[in-house]
Length: 225
Picture 1 (spheres, rainbow, N blue to C red):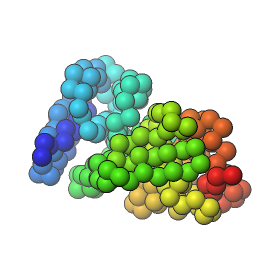
Picture 2: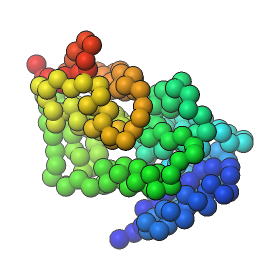
Picture 3: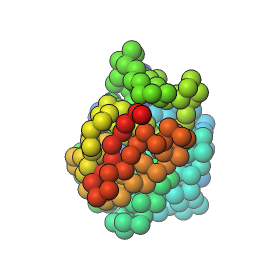
Picture 4: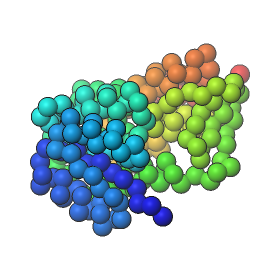
């Protein structure tokens, strides 16, 4: 089986080596970039990168801009690294389509566990695993969503969120439960992350966005009329 490629972007060579060594031990193929501009060149030159680990503060082009450039063309999972623990930074990251957010200093073992969890979720589904809810069809193997037969482009986390809603149709889901299930139990983020993603997901689903109903003071419920 061909090894999955991971792009590690950080201007600190010591940090890149630390992350690379842990990933290589887990049999990943690791590519490195020391600044944002180099990261863009490598990402679009390779075409088959499975996941990007991206530092925020870098010369030439910061992590936010790299994320914007990648998201304009790809839904590849992105893990953002930052020395800041500012809530506004975290919310901006999720607005831009970041899938996980880890503050420095961090445990390399935890980072690798996050990488493995994301890649398991993107590639570990059976080929015939198709979910349907009204006009929405989710092909978990192909990671595709269609509405009335037309493809809908979703980010990795938007896809996971929609899948979670469809798998729990008719059930009132608290923000905390959604956060724990979709972002993993060890993600210590703000529950407003959910509202940000739901807003974007509703927009992309068009009039089918009404399937996601707000339960005031609690969370959401997915119901097909």
